[in-house]
Amino acid sequence: MSKIIHLMSESIKAEAMRLGFNACGIARVSRVDDATAAAFDRWIGEGRHAGMDYMARHGDARYHPDHVLPGCRTIVSLAMNYYPAHRMADDQYQFAYYAYGRDYHDVMKARIRELAKNIFDSSEYSDFSDYSEYSESSPSKELKKNYYRVAVDSAPLLERYWALQAGLGWIGRNHNLIIPHKGSFFVLGELLLTAEVDCYDSPIESRCGTCRRCIDACPTCALTDSGVDAQRCLSYLTIEHRGPFSPEQATLIRQQPTPYYIYGCDRCQRACPHNSFAQPNETAEFQPSQALLAMTPKDWCQLTREKYTELFRGSPVKRAKYEGLMRNIETITKE
Ligand code: SF4
Ligand code: SF4
Image (cartoon, rainbow, N blue to C red; front, side, top):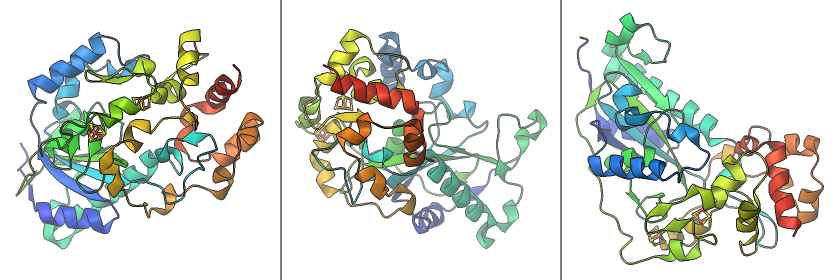
């Protein structure tokens, strides 16, 4: 076995903040607790993941990061603010805030790789030059090496659970991670390490109390005390659902109050009082273009494939594809 490397948690956090992450916490790895695993299994068993088959694919492997990075001992959980300074006007069609700018997967992955490189390149850790990035295709004889792995929705990990274990915040009734005094408009990513750190963080208690504003704000009753039912959630329907909508799904899309969301939905986050702390992000890649902010409902109805490509180059909106976005718009406009 390779020797266990011990890193300084404060150095990792300081470097993360220097690179522009807005929060960083560090969790010691063990199997996901039984209550969380049982709740996730129940959610899948009840079909509330809708058409997101990838959520059900990894079975028990999802509950232990060792399946993502063999020998994983530590997860560094990282958050980046995407709350926009300039928002779509309330009389225009809406996009979820995270979709305003460039795809966060690309932005975060690049920054987390830079974090890993800087940690192991720093003079403090100059002995650790054998550290390298793990990939599924790494030859098995290499498994004795010291590895790291970067994940941004790209591995079967319960990322909000690990953010909770890393002391970043709590998981609210709206199922988002809420960072104290910062809110929930954050994207999450992870740096998995076979190394240990000198000091691990601990989960913090929920501060939702008796509040239910997010549940009350959900226009389709997708969000209840028993969790989110993706089958009714506008975020799932407008982004993840493939193909035409059934009459029932179209009714859910249309029953939202104005302003209409045509990509994603932020209502259960916008209703959350902890988001009164949200500060505009300063990440250049997350800023919306003037062309996007200037779009009117008429422009959306007349959106050509060429204009779509121009507006959404490098954007997460490409996930729904042109056909998906036009389906959403047509569902809103055709009664
Ligand atoms: S994203 Fe929208 S539809 Fe989905 S649970 Fe939240 S408020 Fe409801
Ligand atoms: S709206 Fe209220 S219940 Fe919902 S996540 Fe925020 S604090 Fe928690």
